[in-house]
Length: 432
Image (tube, rainbow, N blue to C red; front, side, top):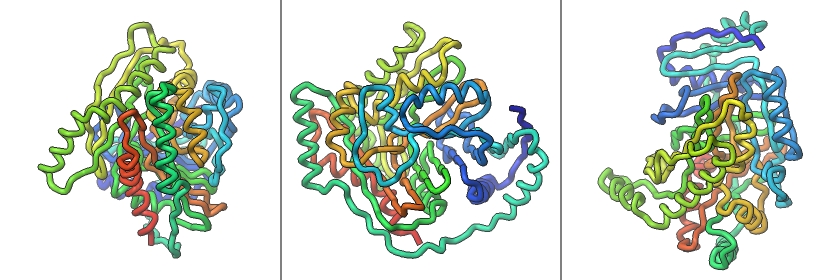
């Protein structure tokens, strides 16, 4: 596919980004990725927008990776989209029979007609060549976008799918599995939801992004389905022969004063329970990468480093490896999916146990959103700290989870879930 590329300089980049995202709402399909200028060494651009499908693939989990592999190979272009958590059912002999109020397809990717890549004050515009005459018109239209205030009124009532006492019971069941030696760690999640609710997706996303400013923020629109994500976590990135995974495990709240904040950072860095959570997942990621890595190339570049975000401090590790140029990019994802930070260890046993105990089908939550380049490079996040919305079903949902290990205390795990849910709850209850 031939693309025309044009670079322009923009003086007020934050205003341009706001207008660009507003302009994108007129399309049925849009993916917006924003790093919020969070200084992470592995990013290729600060923000990206892909809109309007030339071609697409939308499927359930059956043979999903093969369909994606064929699509990605044949298109040989940029494709943007997502893989839902329930693709685990294709990778392993697993099922998903829990309640699903959202009904997102398990996998969706599209080849965009129009792409905007932002780095610093430079915007690179990549349109399919036969639409290059639309660039000027579109830029004028973007420039003249007026921010629209929400016409949506009405109180959102958030309900819990699992109530506190039941949560404690379920957590004790997970702990029993750990003490019996069935698993070492499980990521157990719970859903908060609202029925018969209408929200303004772009406004909710902007408010969520404003209070979280995460490095892997995403606004995804697929017809009536929306993902509004403030994810801090990278799942997997491929740059040439280099593969990078950056699992997050270990959470601490932010303090009001700098001195208190520094104390919390120091405590998190040394906390044996939080470090154990992280190290178990690092081992799992190393194991996953070793399935396709060049022998001896898997290494841990950073172990349990504290990264600070607007709402929380987190322990993040960076694991990397090298791959042969003949290894298909989709196979790399298939061999590591779903990401260990959202499952537990050992992976298959943990997935079986959490499937039994959770009340909701995860769907897009704890899946991944990202893109492939024409050269087969890719970058994908982990869908956490996210609001999912089905506008036609008027169903709003957000889930949170935590890693349960032998040292877990149910009351503390519950508090951690509420801390992670804080930003999502706030933007939904304070939406205009």
